[in-house]
Length: 197
Image 1 (cartoon, rainbow, N blue to C red):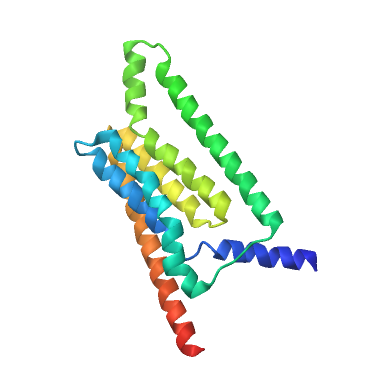
Image 2 (image 1 turned 180 degrees about the horizontal axis):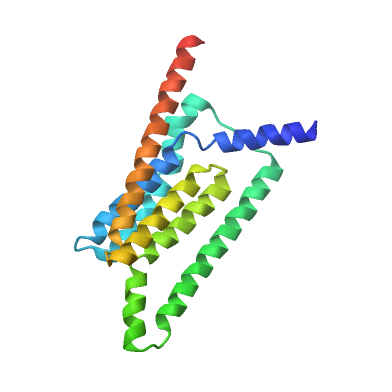
């Protein structure tokens, strides 16, 4: 009986993220960052990204919970999620420290040029890692797809010497489109359910 209950809670936890709101807000953060990178704001455009994610809670309470209800997960699930979030944060800080360490290493002119080309793809790679962590935390496999799309765009950026904005804009567009479709399906599905009840 315990395994059936765990499976049910696992399925419920995974479906908890199926409304597309996190995708939509994360995609908007990437899109604005990418567009801002091409303007006078430059890398400072990344400052706005966390604000979109902060909006997730209030928007979820306003849009999703009135239609889907509120779920309180078991203590075991909450503990597992907290532990995974801690690991995600530690890995993110480690990745940032690694990037900073590589940036501070002394090197010759040829190495600087090679690293300069690779650095253009670095923001997309870091966001791809964040997308993979989001997939681990939520159980929503589509986040792995976002990560793969960002990695592919980063490779194209490095190969063709494009700036760091292109992968972020493309990744943002993919996430916004998927999130908008999922959110629309969720809202329409809840309306149909309400009319049928």
